[in-house]
Length: 280
Image (tube, rainbow, N blue to C red; front, side):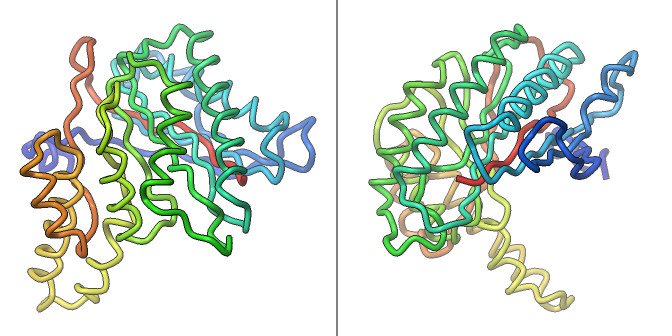
């Protein structure tokens, strides 16, 4: 499998997650461990992907700070071993809170993440940020337009994320395929100091899985559906107006293909996803 990926110029990785454990000194919070063991490794020869996850009922708390510290420590370890950290401070859509509440949480989280990245001497040019978009809670009575989501998200990102970071790869975070694609399109309507693209899972895979249905005779149709969604999101991440127009023609078939990002550092040997999740 690894050799097959490399032949396609895809950098492979492994996500490490040791599960939720109680966080001492917190208000009944927990976090996912999976990075401390890297400190004892003389070298990282396999391309490990470690994910530190923390879910909190109160975002402005001890647990959030501990998660930021652990995540940024892992980023430093990753870069020391030739890996590109993909920093993932996810803010969950659970709840009926308005978009302003998500904005408040996002500003605090992104600020702390980059504070601790700097404290750990992490090279900003050698990371990718994988944040959530700023949206209302999933159960909120009013849905935000793509233009509103882009305005709220980019305003805070431009205030908190240094332009030295080469790329921002948005996660879909429970959005529908249509929402994730149209929101990505809105993000790219204005000039940004970083490359703005996507790193979707469900918003790329849902329709594909429904098309495939686990049946051998549907494999080709599923592959075509995946390619269509990947092209739409990839084109929306391009600076080419023509490609964006093509993408909008496919907007009903939403999703993405990862766009290569050049980092201003030596050639990485792999990538590593590090991050945590918070409830707004």
